[in-house]
Image (spheres, rainbow, N blue to C red):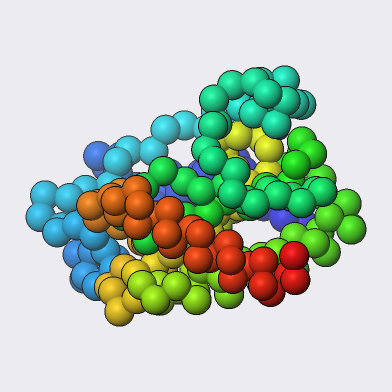
Length: 201
Ligand SMILES: [Zn+2]
């Protein structure tokens, strides 16, 4: 039988020290090249107790940008009958694109047909972002803790900056100086041109 969340939480709590913190091995994660911070004085935050999941933006549709509600006004660069691609504001990454279905719903509610299209678009977008001369890797990330409407992130990792590899790229993205907006736009335009060529549209 799969473990319950109460059993999971109890095991995590039991691993905490007398001060209520998980241990941080200085020879472990802080010693990784990709870890963005020096570990002096660094310690793990105390964990909050289990709580009700927080409501996400746009649950059921009302309040979601797809219904014309709320903010979420990131520019839409590409669209077809069922999908759209947005570009994120300038950040440390050369460019970040977001793939979304046009119809409201989360990733787990996609029909078989939409799921197939999602796979094709994901592969094409990875190729498109990785075609940029400043990009070494395109990370594909779906978190979805903030908003219900399915949105998948395509995060470009700068070429040769192998220290930024893996999941820490999402943190380095907030630490590197934001790329100028014209650089982001040129990168996004080139990636979308590559995507159109791949899809033949
Ligand atoms: Zn929506």
